[in-house]
Picture: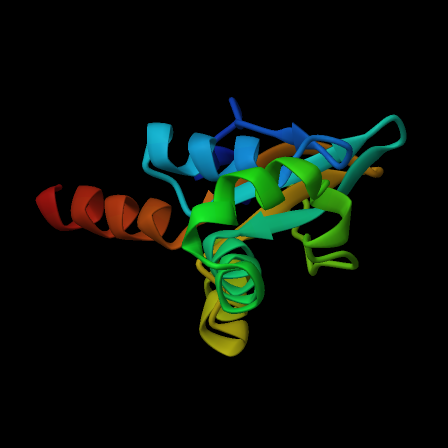
Length: 137
């Protein structure tokens, strides 16, 4: 049976928890992605999602107006907005287990972490690509 390592994205775009929220928003836009794993000196620290950034942006706009969005984002470090204690997968987990995880938890992406270190990310799109590949065989 195939494992998570067989279809995960191993070259992951990451940020550090001390980077600012504006940098994160620009990366999401530049690479057309919705999830960024966050790392620190110890390894994997959490995830920052498009939803996290939108919630933060709505609070800024509500309190300070749209004109202050970029300025406030630049002052906010990712550590203040990201999701900690994320559910993760290991690279040797089966694809069946990963698929069940996606269905049960309804996440769009899952960080792949071995011994505290980020080794990849698995997204629902990776499963769609796999399904198309299998259908074309």
